[in-house]
Each structure stands twice: as C-alpha cells, then as structure tokens.
Length: 130
Length: 130
DNA sequence: GTGATTTTGACAATCATTATCAATAAGAAC
DNA sequence: GTTCTTATTGATAATGATTGTCAAAATCAC
Image (cartoon, rainbow over the protein chains, first blue to last red):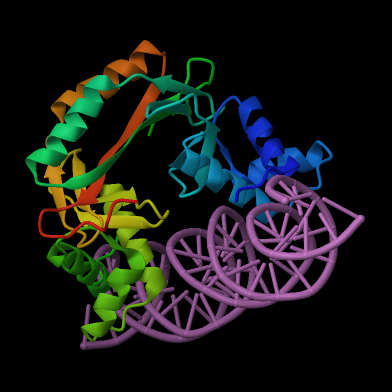
C-alpha cells in the first residue's frame, strides 16, 4: 500500500511553487535551502512518482537533464524560456490530432509524442545570433 | 582550418548505413566491431560536428541519451520505433507553422521546437499495455 | 501500542558525456 | 618530397545526473 510521507508532500509543494521546469537536483537544492533535510534520492523518487501519476509533467532539456513541473491535468505541451525557465502551457489540439493521425498512418501503435518549444521569452534578451 | 580525417568519414559512413537513430556509444561499438580503431571521444566529436553542420539530426531519447541519424536535409521530424529503432522522417509543415505561430504569439524569439513521436512500428509487437 | 511493510537516506555504483594533453597527422609552403 | 604549423586524435581522468543498495526509521491497520 502507498503511504503518505511529509517528504512526498514537500516535493509536491515545492514543485507547485516553481514557475517553470526544474531539475531534480535543483528542487533538492531548493528544499535543502528551505531547511528541509530531505534526501536527494527521495526527491528523484517522488518526482518520478508524481510524473507517473500524471501530477507532474516531465521533459528532457536540450542538455539531457530531466525537468519536472507541476501539471495542471491531462496531456499538454510547453513553451519554455531558455533563460529564465518560464514555461507556458500550450493548448495543442491541432498537434495532438496531427500526431495521432501521423502515427496511425504509418502503422505505429502506443504512440507518445514529444512536442515542446524552447526559446527566449519577451522578458529575456536573446544572445547575439550566430 | 578544418581538416579531413578518415575518422570523420568513417563516422559519416557508419551513420549513413544506420536504419534509425543511434547513440554515440552504439555507433562506436559498430565501428569497433567493423575493425576500426577509432576512439570514443572522436565519435562524439564527429557526431557533434555533423549535427552542427546540419548533416545529422540529433534528438534525446526518453532515457536522456543523445541519438543521431544521417539527415537528408533541412529541418524535419521523426516517428521512431521504441523497439527496432526504425525512424520515419515526417513532413510537418503544419506543425512547423503552428510552432512558429505559437512562439510568436507569446513573444518568444529564437524558438526551436522538439517534435517527435515514439511508438511501436507495425513490425514490432507492442508489450502488453500497462 | 504492536507489528508488518513501505519508505527513507547516505553512499556506492553506473553510465553517458566532456575535458585534458601529449602524440599524431593533414595541409600549406617551399 | 621535405618541413613546419596546428587541427585532430585517443587514452584516460573527470564530471555530473541518475539509480541501486540496504539498514534504520516511519506509516498505517489492527
């Protein structure tokens, strides 16, 4: 049976307070700074559990790190600022339909899609192109 | 000045022969098995260079590994089989337009998008749904 | 409270990737 | 062809995120 622990709550709460996506490492730092003595492995486990339950979204940063964010509900996508981490949830019915259709057309089953946009938000100065 | 080496050619050739996406590690294995004494770090460098030149596509697997594939040209997306690695290049003008528009709507600049679909191709038996 | 069992946490282990740096080799100049 | 400059290689160490281990602690049912 699944048990409730203050650690899991702490992770959930901390994730809720984040504006954008955060790594497990970073969230552990945040919790530690706030005085919590939670273990790093526990943060990893809690985040994985949240993601599994659909209570959190996870994605891979371009650097290959796993990032997490409190998830409002259901399946959706994001527009993520490379600089400040700001994440905007995107309604993408259009893309959902396209993805489903494309997968089916090619005979693919159990298709999951990764659709995210990384860029610089209006508040962040983009570095010189080139 | 950029110099030509057999190592770079070997990596390019090996990548061309692959059906789907491969990791740097895996490509290095392949080359080694074929009798090549190329170094692992060199494979990483060559792949990064190819990706930088637009001669290869790279993406992150759900496990956080960087995968590479010889790239026909331009920007496109993929439908990737989790089992056999088969990758189908997808024309996604629709999604391109959507991504560009969405980023602009929210004031994002220098937007890059990640759009890939992972699933099981018709030749591969999907594991029992959990 | 008691007991069965899940969960935690410190640390070791793993794994992909990157940095280091002396040795090598490509290409230019002659 | 020889010589020189310097980009490139490769063996290995270093890094850094993530996962495994397992005894100790905490949770929930009773």
